[in-house]
Length: 169
Length: 100
Image 1 (cartoon, rainbow over the protein chains, first blue to last red):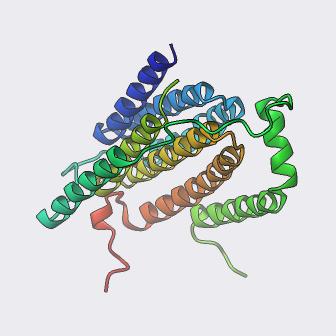
Image 2 (tube, chains in turn cyan, red):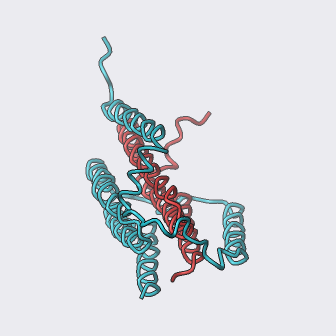
Image 3 (spheres, rainbow over the protein chains, first blue to last red):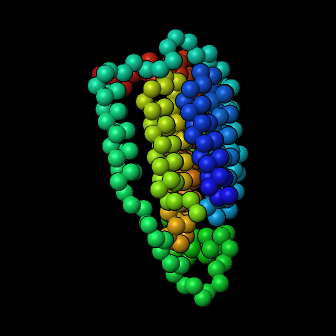
Protein backbone atom coordinates (compact mmCIF):
# COMPACT_ATOMS: atom_id res chain seq x y z
CA UNK A 1 0.00 0.00 0.00
CA UNK A 2 2.74 2.41 1.02
CA UNK A 3 4.76 1.42 -2.02
CA UNK A 4 1.81 2.12 -4.30
CA UNK A 5 1.26 5.53 -2.71
CA UNK A 6 4.95 6.36 -3.03
CA UNK A 7 4.93 5.29 -6.67
CA UNK A 8 1.89 7.45 -7.43
CA UNK A 9 3.21 10.55 -5.64
CA UNK A 10 6.71 10.17 -7.02
CA UNK A 11 5.52 9.70 -10.59
CA UNK A 12 3.15 12.67 -10.33
CA UNK A 13 5.89 14.87 -8.85
CA UNK A 14 8.41 14.00 -11.55
CA UNK A 15 5.86 14.36 -14.36
CA UNK A 16 4.61 17.75 -13.22
CA UNK A 17 8.18 18.97 -12.67
CA UNK A 18 8.96 17.97 -16.25
CA UNK A 19 5.89 19.89 -17.39
CA UNK A 20 7.11 22.99 -15.55
CA UNK A 21 10.27 22.92 -17.63
CA UNK A 22 8.50 21.86 -20.82
CA UNK A 23 5.54 24.23 -21.14
CA UNK A 24 6.03 27.36 -23.22
CA UNK A 25 3.36 29.41 -21.48
CA UNK A 26 4.43 30.56 -17.98
CA UNK A 27 0.88 30.21 -16.63
CA UNK A 28 0.76 26.53 -17.60
CA UNK A 29 4.14 26.10 -15.92
CA UNK A 30 2.83 27.67 -12.73
CA UNK A 31 -0.19 25.35 -12.77
CA UNK A 32 2.07 22.33 -13.21
CA UNK A 33 4.09 23.61 -10.25
CA UNK A 34 0.87 23.76 -8.22
CA UNK A 35 0.27 20.06 -8.98
CA UNK A 36 3.82 19.32 -7.90
CA UNK A 37 3.41 21.16 -4.59
CA UNK A 38 0.20 19.27 -3.81
CA UNK A 39 1.76 15.89 -4.50
CA UNK A 40 4.78 16.79 -2.40
CA UNK A 41 2.36 17.56 0.45
CA UNK A 42 0.93 14.08 -0.06
CA UNK A 43 4.44 12.66 0.15
CA UNK A 44 4.92 14.49 3.46
CA UNK A 45 1.75 12.86 4.82
CA UNK A 46 3.19 9.52 3.74
CA UNK A 47 6.36 10.40 5.70
CA UNK A 48 4.32 11.23 8.83
CA UNK A 49 5.05 14.96 8.64
CA UNK A 50 1.48 16.22 8.70
CA UNK A 51 2.32 19.71 9.92
CA UNK A 52 4.75 20.24 7.08
CA UNK A 53 2.13 19.02 4.61
CA UNK A 54 -0.19 21.74 5.85
CA UNK A 55 2.56 24.37 5.72
CA UNK A 56 3.48 23.24 2.22
CA UNK A 57 -0.07 23.73 0.99
CA UNK A 58 -0.55 27.06 2.79
CA UNK A 59 2.77 28.71 2.01
CA UNK A 60 3.79 27.24 -1.33
CA UNK A 61 0.48 26.53 -3.04
CA UNK A 62 -1.36 29.35 -1.33
CA UNK A 63 1.09 32.25 -1.16
CA UNK A 64 4.14 31.76 -3.34
CA UNK A 65 2.28 30.44 -6.37
CA UNK A 66 -0.28 33.25 -6.24
CA UNK A 67 2.61 35.72 -6.20
CA UNK A 68 4.02 34.05 -9.32
CA UNK A 69 0.67 34.17 -11.08
CA UNK A 70 0.28 37.85 -10.20
CA UNK A 71 3.65 38.71 -11.72
CA UNK A 72 3.10 36.57 -14.83
CA UNK A 73 -0.24 38.22 -15.49
CA UNK A 74 1.13 41.67 -14.61
CA UNK A 75 3.98 41.42 -17.09
CA UNK A 76 1.84 39.73 -19.76
CA UNK A 77 4.77 38.94 -22.00
CA UNK A 78 4.23 36.73 -25.01
CA UNK A 79 7.27 34.54 -25.32
CA UNK A 80 8.68 35.09 -28.74
CA UNK A 81 11.70 33.68 -30.49
CA UNK A 82 13.70 30.84 -29.06
CA UNK A 83 12.44 28.63 -26.28
CA UNK A 84 15.76 27.62 -24.74
CA UNK A 85 19.06 29.37 -24.30
CA UNK A 86 22.02 28.68 -26.53
CA UNK A 87 24.56 26.39 -24.87
CA UNK A 88 27.96 25.24 -26.01
CA UNK A 89 28.67 21.48 -26.44
CA UNK A 90 31.10 21.61 -23.52
CA UNK A 91 28.26 22.56 -21.18
CA UNK A 92 26.13 19.65 -22.41
CA UNK A 93 29.05 17.26 -21.92
CA UNK A 94 29.54 18.51 -18.38
CA UNK A 95 25.84 18.02 -17.70
CA UNK A 96 25.92 14.40 -18.87
CA UNK A 97 28.99 13.86 -16.69
CA UNK A 98 27.12 15.25 -13.66
CA UNK A 99 24.17 12.91 -14.32
CA UNK A 100 26.46 9.87 -14.52
CA UNK A 101 28.22 10.88 -11.31
CA UNK A 102 24.95 11.31 -9.46
CA UNK A 103 23.59 7.95 -10.65
CA UNK A 104 26.80 6.21 -9.58
CA UNK A 105 26.62 7.80 -6.15
CA UNK A 106 23.00 6.78 -5.61
CA UNK A 107 23.43 3.19 -6.74
CA UNK A 108 26.61 2.58 -4.76
CA UNK A 109 25.50 4.01 -1.43
CA UNK A 110 23.95 1.73 1.18
CA UNK A 111 21.19 3.68 2.89
CA UNK A 112 20.52 2.16 6.28
CA UNK A 113 19.96 -1.51 5.50
CA UNK A 114 18.59 -1.76 9.03
CA UNK A 115 16.68 1.16 10.44
CA UNK A 116 18.00 2.69 13.68
CA UNK A 117 15.88 2.03 16.72
CA UNK A 118 13.50 4.60 18.16
CA UNK A 119 15.54 6.49 20.81
CA UNK A 120 13.17 6.19 23.79
CA UNK A 121 10.80 3.33 23.18
CA UNK A 122 8.99 3.59 26.51
CA UNK A 123 8.04 7.25 26.21
CA UNK A 124 4.73 7.81 24.44
CA UNK A 125 5.52 9.94 21.39
CA UNK A 126 3.83 13.28 20.96
CA UNK A 127 2.04 14.21 17.77
CA UNK A 128 3.97 15.69 14.89
CA UNK A 129 2.84 19.28 15.45
CA UNK A 130 3.50 19.17 19.21
CA UNK A 131 6.99 17.82 18.68
CA UNK A 132 7.85 20.47 16.10
CA UNK A 133 6.50 23.20 18.35
CA UNK A 134 8.49 21.98 21.34
CA UNK A 135 11.76 21.79 19.42
CA UNK A 136 11.20 25.00 17.45
CA UNK A 137 10.54 27.17 20.51
CA UNK A 138 13.29 25.74 22.70
CA UNK A 139 16.26 24.42 20.78
CA UNK A 140 15.77 26.49 17.63
CA UNK A 141 14.48 29.70 19.17
CA UNK A 142 17.32 31.90 17.92
CA UNK A 143 17.11 30.72 14.25
CA UNK A 144 13.36 31.22 14.50
CA UNK A 145 13.85 34.88 15.43
CA UNK A 146 16.44 35.29 12.66
CA UNK A 147 13.88 33.89 10.21
CA UNK A 148 11.48 36.66 11.16
CA UNK A 149 14.25 39.17 10.46
CA UNK A 150 14.87 37.58 7.04
CA UNK A 151 11.19 37.90 6.22
CA UNK A 152 11.15 41.55 7.32
CA UNK A 153 14.16 42.40 5.14
CA UNK A 154 12.61 40.57 2.18
CA UNK A 155 9.37 42.49 2.69
CA UNK A 156 11.09 45.86 2.67
CA UNK A 157 13.38 44.85 -0.21
CA UNK A 158 10.53 43.62 -2.39
CA UNK A 159 8.56 46.82 -1.87
CA UNK A 160 11.58 49.02 -2.61
CA UNK A 161 12.50 47.02 -5.74
CA UNK A 162 9.02 46.83 -7.19
CA UNK A 163 8.04 50.42 -6.45
CA UNK A 164 10.43 51.81 -9.02
CA UNK A 165 11.56 55.40 -8.99
CA UNK A 166 11.20 56.71 -5.48
CA UNK A 167 11.10 60.43 -4.91
CA UNK A 168 13.88 61.11 -2.42
CA UNK A 169 13.50 64.40 -0.62
CA UNK B 1 8.08 0.19 4.02
CA UNK B 2 9.59 2.23 1.21
CA UNK B 3 13.39 2.08 1.17
CA UNK B 4 15.16 5.32 1.99
CA UNK B 5 17.20 5.14 -1.20
CA UNK B 6 14.02 5.54 -3.24
CA UNK B 7 13.35 8.86 -1.59
CA UNK B 8 16.92 9.96 -2.24
CA UNK B 9 16.62 8.89 -5.87
CA UNK B 10 13.32 10.76 -6.26
CA UNK B 11 14.76 13.86 -4.65
CA UNK B 12 17.92 13.87 -6.75
CA UNK B 13 15.95 13.33 -9.96
CA UNK B 14 13.70 16.24 -9.02
CA UNK B 15 16.74 18.39 -8.25
CA UNK B 16 18.19 17.47 -11.64
CA UNK B 17 14.99 18.49 -13.44
CA UNK B 18 15.08 21.84 -11.67
CA UNK B 19 18.76 22.33 -12.48
CA UNK B 20 18.20 21.55 -16.16
CA UNK B 21 15.29 23.99 -16.18
CA UNK B 22 17.46 26.76 -14.73
CA UNK B 23 20.16 26.07 -17.28
CA UNK B 24 18.10 25.78 -20.46
CA UNK B 25 15.05 28.03 -20.12
CA UNK B 26 15.11 31.60 -21.40
CA UNK B 27 12.12 32.97 -19.54
CA UNK B 28 13.27 34.39 -16.21
CA UNK B 29 9.98 33.55 -14.44
CA UNK B 30 10.38 29.88 -15.35
CA UNK B 31 13.93 30.00 -14.01
CA UNK B 32 12.59 31.14 -10.64
CA UNK B 33 9.98 28.35 -10.73
CA UNK B 34 12.76 25.83 -11.34
CA UNK B 35 14.63 27.16 -8.30
CA UNK B 36 11.48 26.35 -6.31
CA UNK B 37 11.60 22.80 -7.71
CA UNK B 38 15.17 22.43 -6.49
CA UNK B 39 14.29 23.70 -2.99
CA UNK B 40 11.41 21.20 -2.81
CA UNK B 41 13.72 18.37 -3.83
CA UNK B 42 15.97 19.23 -0.89
CA UNK B 43 12.93 19.36 1.41
CA UNK B 44 11.86 15.83 0.43
CA UNK B 45 15.34 14.62 1.35
CA UNK B 46 15.20 16.36 4.74
CA UNK B 47 11.80 14.93 5.64
CA UNK B 48 12.70 11.41 4.50
CA UNK B 49 15.89 11.34 6.58
CA UNK B 50 14.02 12.86 9.51
CA UNK B 51 11.53 9.99 9.47
CA UNK B 52 14.00 7.20 8.93
CA UNK B 53 16.32 8.40 11.70
CA UNK B 54 13.54 9.31 14.15
CA UNK B 55 14.95 12.83 14.53
CA UNK B 56 12.62 15.81 14.24
CA UNK B 57 15.35 18.35 13.33
CA UNK B 58 15.05 17.65 9.62
CA UNK B 59 11.48 18.92 9.63
CA UNK B 60 12.57 22.10 11.44
CA UNK B 61 15.11 22.64 8.67
CA UNK B 62 12.36 22.28 6.07
CA UNK B 63 10.46 24.97 7.95
CA UNK B 64 13.38 27.37 7.61
CA UNK B 65 13.90 26.43 3.96
CA UNK B 66 10.28 27.34 3.26
CA UNK B 67 10.81 30.69 5.01
CA UNK B 68 13.88 31.47 2.94
CA UNK B 69 12.07 30.36 -0.23
CA UNK B 70 9.26 32.80 0.47
CA UNK B 71 11.74 35.63 1.00
CA UNK B 72 13.62 34.67 -2.14
CA UNK B 73 10.46 34.65 -4.24
CA UNK B 74 9.39 38.07 -3.00
CA UNK B 75 12.77 39.67 -3.73
CA UNK B 76 13.23 37.78 -7.01
CA UNK B 77 9.88 38.84 -8.37
CA UNK B 78 10.62 42.43 -7.31
CA UNK B 79 13.86 42.28 -9.28
CA UNK B 80 12.01 40.83 -12.29
CA UNK B 81 9.47 43.66 -12.22
CA UNK B 82 12.22 46.27 -11.93
CA UNK B 83 14.15 44.67 -14.80
CA UNK B 84 11.06 44.48 -16.97
CA UNK B 85 10.42 48.15 -16.37
CA UNK B 86 13.98 48.92 -17.37
CA UNK B 87 14.47 46.64 -20.39
CA UNK B 88 10.98 45.52 -21.53
CA UNK B 89 12.13 41.90 -21.68
CA UNK B 90 12.13 38.81 -19.50
CA UNK B 91 14.57 36.78 -21.56
CA UNK B 92 17.70 36.02 -19.59
CA UNK B 93 20.18 36.26 -22.45
CA UNK B 94 19.02 39.77 -23.33
CA UNK B 95 19.65 41.05 -19.81
CA UNK B 96 23.36 41.82 -19.78
CA UNK B 97 23.63 45.30 -18.33
CA UNK B 98 26.13 44.14 -15.73
CA UNK B 99 28.47 42.90 -18.44
CA UNK B 100 31.54 44.98 -19.17
